[in-house]
Image (cartoon, rainbow, N blue to C red; front, side, top):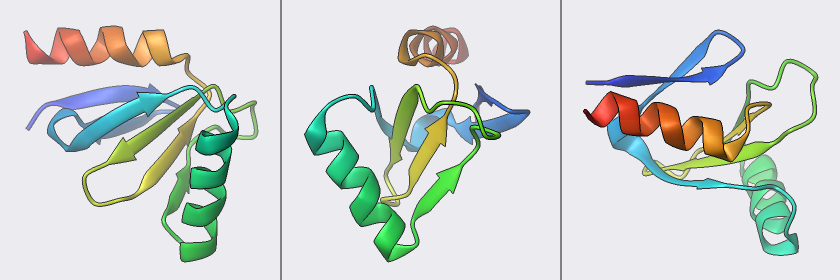
Length: 80
């Protein structure tokens, strides 16, 4: 199991990540709100602005202050 640093001294299993999204679009904001209502949000942004939304295969939504490009680079490094 390879772990990816997602900021805030937090890690996620690289194999469980389905998508890394920018939180700027309305559909992503709706998805985050629906996940909050269902109790499936994990917020690791430590009070900072959310810059990336990570969707896992267990339908959990992870909010992080790292840029989506940074998460992508870290995931690519984990797969190598």
